[in-house]
Amino acid sequence: MPATRRLIAVVLLVPTLAALALWAFAWPSARTAPRDLPLGVAGPAAATAQVEKQLATHEGAFEIHHYADEPAAREAIEDRTVYGAVVVTAQGPELLTASAASPLVAQLLQQAVGGQAAADGTPVKTVDVVAAPAADPRGAVLNASVLPLALAGIVAGAAVTLLGLRGVRAVAALTGAAGLVGLIAAALAHSWLGALTGDWWAEAAVFGLSTLAVSAAVAGCAALLGQAGIGLVSFVVMFLGNPFSGAASAPRMLPEPVGAIGQWLPPGAGTSLLRSVSYFDGAAATGPALTLVWWAALGLSAILLGARLKARDTRTGPTEKREPALVA
Image (cartoon, rainbow, N blue to C red; front, side):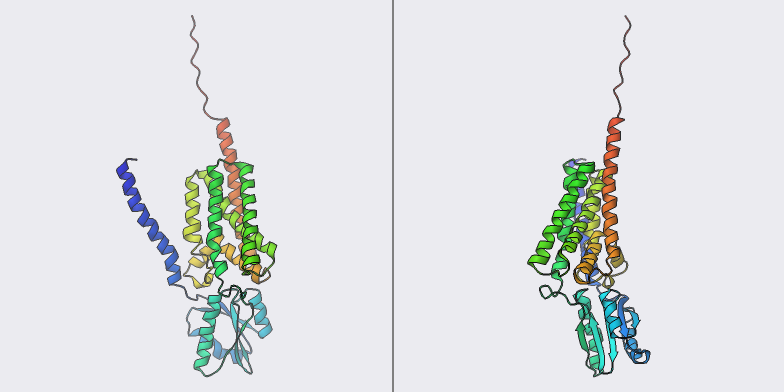
């Protein structure tokens, strides 16, 4: 490519990437709001009718789930079926939240439910059923872990590709690196910072699996498409997976279909799985765990397939044509 074309390509490419980055990161943040956010209402139907009417004023904000009493609503919160619940009691309404699921959502519910009740002159008691750890009440550590894990996966996958590791060796390198990342991340987030409160080994496994899902996808795509595969997966993970993860808020707080897309990508699935394992005893962990496993399995399979295709091409490569012997 002539120098002038390369110059023009750089001049156009950098602003395009900047615009994409601003769109991907700024747009979801600017449009953060509840969208069919699962919220429970508990108590007799006659008593909860007024509460539901008040919640309906926030059109499209809440998806109402009905429960017979407070224990049932608490169980739904602990199972991650709903983010909170309004319980109607003889002493007045009570708001159940789960700041561990999302500090932002817990604050929003206090404003939406508590503010409306305060306007009616009825005080609302708020109970944090599954509280975020005191060492990280705003979930900053969990939110900050999304980017480093994504970068670790991209670097590992790119390194394996550029160093020429193929097949079983590449799989072993990626698996070993992901395992070490998991141990180090759990040591920092759980043991040192105290931001995670679940089973230490389960958290380490989540960190490792999240890293492996990205690194395997990078190396697998590169094994089939060449080095361009590194850029392709890196773009998807960094420009879509990271901002669409919902780590700072919740998937139902992002514009549609951003929240759903984010949960099908490793950063979003990893964040949801880490919340479940660390704060909710593994509740609602199956979906995100399967998502990460599929990414890792498909990526590792692509690595092995790419190595076999490369070996076959080497064996069946063109052979030099021999010149016919001259007869004297």
